[in-house]
Amino acid sequence: MPKALQTHGTSPQVNQSIALSGLLPPPDRTRARVLAWLKGNVPETRIRHILRVEQFAIELAQLHELNVEKAAQAALMHDLAKFFKPKRLLSMAIAEGLTLDPIDESNPHLLHADAGAIVARDEFGVQDEEVLDAIRHHTLGSPTMTLLGCVVYLADGLEPGRGNTPELEELRTLSRQDLIQATWRAADASLRHLIQAGHLIHPRTVQTRNAFLQQYKQTEAKPRHLQNHFVKGIQT
Image (tube, rainbow, N blue to C red; front, side):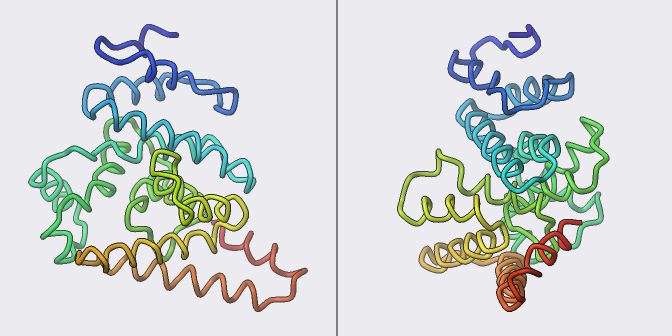
């Protein structure tokens, strides 16, 4: 294992996970830098989550013939700002000129996805807007997500560490078959959980659910021989 990936206090399990498998593209200096940065800024349990998200995102990207390197990069960086303090998240969002919903202001933790994209751009030089958008949208989703964004959104919510309930297993299976249907179903499940727990609901979660449900219905309404053409058309 390269010395750059070894950090005092990190368990052998995490160091072994960092190696991942032959599914990953060859590791580069950026990935090593991100891993070293994560080790200094998030707990080990979160690193394990991030690596599981990365692995699942790679799997989904391969299955759906999307850019595997972009999926891996966005997944690895999706939680860069997960443990930033609320004031820091708010100040970053304001400095970036983001439009804040009142729910963002009352629960700044929701801004960690937007802040993570800022860190990816400014700290690690990521310029690919599709990768940055996938990072921005991994928590709340977005009605305009690309399929790459769907991959990271689903990988974050469905990685194996989230549990093995029948609903999660069904969503995992669905995500391997149909990203559009899996996205609206995952957003739908999030809404049900938030309602049952009595939490505020960010409007973007509702917008994501509605947009992808509508896309799914439009796809189902088309003749079978035109459905693949329709899905490919929204991968921009």
